[in-house]
Image (cartoon, rainbow, N blue to C red; front, side, top):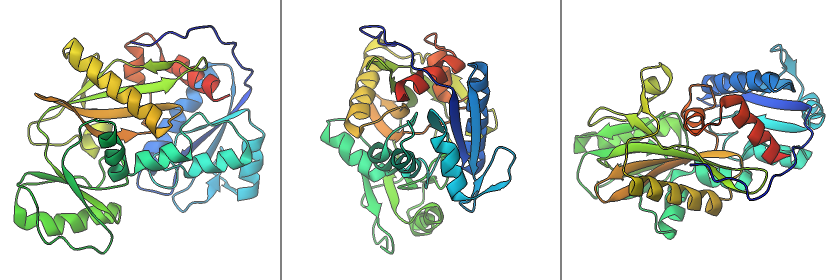
Length: 326
């Protein structure tokens, strides 16, 4: 449930909002969809949206798709009262865009550099979570140019790049002889690769943001329906076939444990804006899967569904994130 603010905070004055989408990575099209939804919400709130796109080659584009020199993009950014980055993946979600906005002095409705960089690195996230006493799947990291010589544990295993999102490059390995080739496939999405034990449990996610009064607002837990032995893959995430149950039908103590772990991670990472925390709910309690500091933000994405379930609609969520930033 949302934690109510201890005292009302005045609404800041916001007129122009830069909404940044695209990105030079394999989540470009997903980011465009998130940015388009945010633009619609900004208009619904009676504000002026200034859409900017980072093309797949890293160049900037204006609202009409025309090339935009970097200095002109910065001029547009600094002419706005706030920016809402809807960038997923490397060279965006990993703290890159937050660093640019910070240097430009533009309030950012998202996590700062440190949180983005740590959250994007799944191995770093696991180390931090474990230091807080939050369980994660047993794993080993395969560094760039390092060869896999032995498994170290039994199959099935999950192989995935340490950076990246949208389940790109995530594979389930059931044959030990296929591990080396699978690691190389995962490396197409990132140089460093994680090899994790396959966790059997229900996939339950929760979202957190800090509002303008300083209170943490936690959405309803959401359960993802995944077939036994599978993963929540790219197709299921974006083709409309994913089965979401929100609020998740889980015991109160399990929901409380997931909310508490998510809140602790949000603070420890130094997050701002909204972040999503993905868990496996097992017989022995929740196990952290990963953290997403720039989650999908279409109207039908997981995070907006979580907040809609506790009475905070999509446009209202965008408004609260902008207020918190400014």
